[in-house]
Amino acid sequence: MVGHNSGFLSIWSVNHHHKDIHFIKKIDLRNPKPVNPFDSHAMYGMCILKEIGPDARILCGSDDGYISVVNIHSGDILSQTIFNSEAQRGINSVSVSGNKLLVANCSVGIYDKNLWYFDINLETNEIFYQDSMNLLVDNNRIQSFNFDVEWGEYSGGPCWFAGTEEGILWMGRANAKLDLVGYEALSESSIGAALAFINKPGRLAAAIHNIDQFSTGSP
Image (cartoon, rainbow, N blue to C red; front, side, top):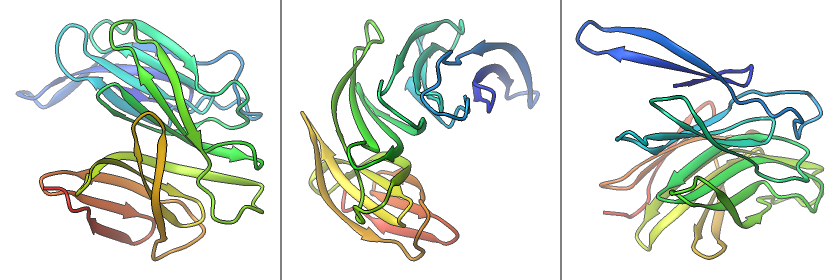
């Protein structure tokens, strides 16, 4: 499944034996009333919600503000939710762990937030707000992009990481609410990082122009 700048999702089949792919169908996931003022529907964030089985699903986060859940086999749209009805910018990244969802966006103004936390009902595909916070060092900034968010794990258990436009790497936990553990500046500043996490053992990569690698302490 491929997310497109137009706000569409395309489904493809892959034949690993013959090493070729075939287009199946396209799905219109556009929000008719985008949260951003640019009429952008770019599909920036995608992740697997359920990997196998007839009810395998993917979760998509769009620049127009929609969180969409789509059946991988049929292409049926199972739910669409606006992540924040007061948002002025759209979604940059999504990350799922079980039924827990994190959404990264750009906050505008001191009262907006750039990290959002939701519960997902895996039976109905409904999404329920849990908490949000604004990851910002300089409170005088008018806006702050959260470019990427990833679930991870450290020596104390599950956690999350986020990379924001101040060149900051953030770490926190999420149970009933979001809990900030701390932050540090990366080797380059004033731009957000793309993040990737792998476990056994825990390793985090944060890429801007250089790649910073971290050991998280998880087994």
